[in-house]
Length: 614
Ligand code: F6R
Image (cartoon, rainbow, N blue to C red; front, side, top):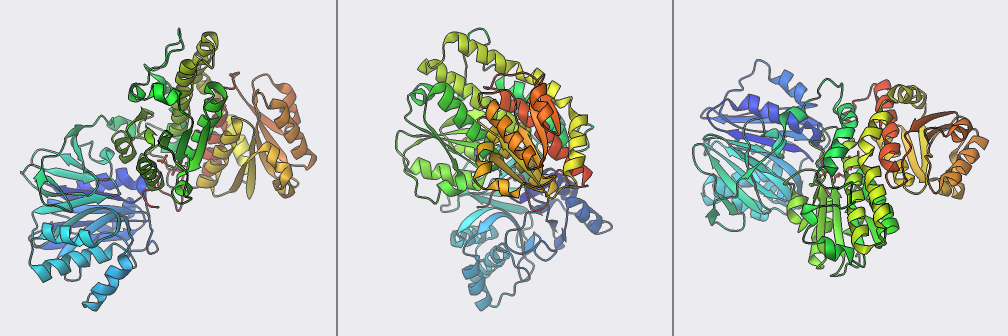
């Protein structure tokens, strides 16, 4: 997490840095800061709070300078506070750095530096690197870039950093290992950011630094990169980015999350565009072209993911096992890495990730690669670390997701997983052509049906008013609606701070039903499906304990609706695709509950969009 930005060129750096920080605020918003450099020295301004608080703080101050770096923080080491905010400046004020990641050996570095007379002003891991660069520069007399290189060789952990120095005020040094970093190439100028959306306003030409690389940015000169562990410089690969700036605005919606919920008819369609032939049921997944035949023969597919992406992966498991007949396992990436899993050479490991930067998921695929498995990706962010570290994969094409709570990325992932299911079923002949065509048509009909589900907004608002009065809520589902229940509960927790549990409905009687009392809110995800009768039974059990039940039902299912205290209907759809509809009211309920409670919907407390730390 954390977002870093930088600029070197002929323009004033401050507005560019602040614009970039606003775009990266989804990565963390515990504090924000900038350092500007010219022959007068380095001026640093930093503040606990959001980028807007920093803007207020800098009003009337000297923010001139055509070289600068900036940071928006998601706290890891040290509480959110002014003194723990970045940039961190070295003892004599000659070096300022911003950092995204975690320095694992910072305690040793700090102890060593303290023995050499350095005084620390913060509790962060990052400050040690600022002092270390100064210390090495003084001790060895090397240039500023070489001091950065030598310092980083002593650092253990993950980082993307940008550093400036009064010893060489006309350069910015950047480096990355484990955290993302993009350099935008302008006309004699460079833009630095944690992701490409923050530079897209100025340039479409970017260089993604590779693992363990650094670069020295000098205005008017070509960009050269080198390995931190080497010295040899090379011309980097320049990539043209496609990010549409318009799609990064709120477009009249009050929050990004709201906009992203309502974008879903389009984003689901975009995920399928050009990939599915309704006449033949044929699926074309260009990214998997060279692997799909082998994948169809796989003994086992393993999905690794976190959070919402993990729930999408569970849906993938249910679909692929049922319709394509391949055994699937779904693993929390954070557990997979440390539980000594048995990964075999002929396993296929799929990383599912919106950002493509989640540290746990990245670490899991690196482990899978070491074990010789074929590692594939389902990512939303083009050019992200996971997209680049997998041998092949599929982009979800949902467009930039800015709201911290994932919505359109989830439905895009589920759409892509449904496409993979059809592609595998076709090759394995587990579905007849008639069935394939029928399911393909069901999938293609989803965007229009999502519009109908979204039109139930006012009813969701009323339900939200009820839930907003509660301290907790239960979300129940079975079969493909179980991961939907998990996702509904996660959405509520994240943005309303109301305690919520997602459960497979059949498990309630094995313990959690003890928590149900008069008025406990229960949201039962109960559209028509193979397990419909079972969830109806669960609704009755909940009502018998006087729970306050909201049922998500298929249009026309008045019998189930009558059992609940209130219901919300979704269009008729096959079980193969029904999760894509059932999740919509749950997203709307969470959103409106958060609005009712006055929560900061797009920036919920303690969270950040991209979890680039372990
Ligand atoms: C929840 C949410 C998170 C992410 C998780 C994985 O709304 O956004 O749970 O799903 O942090 O992130 P990605 O998909 O970027 O790997």
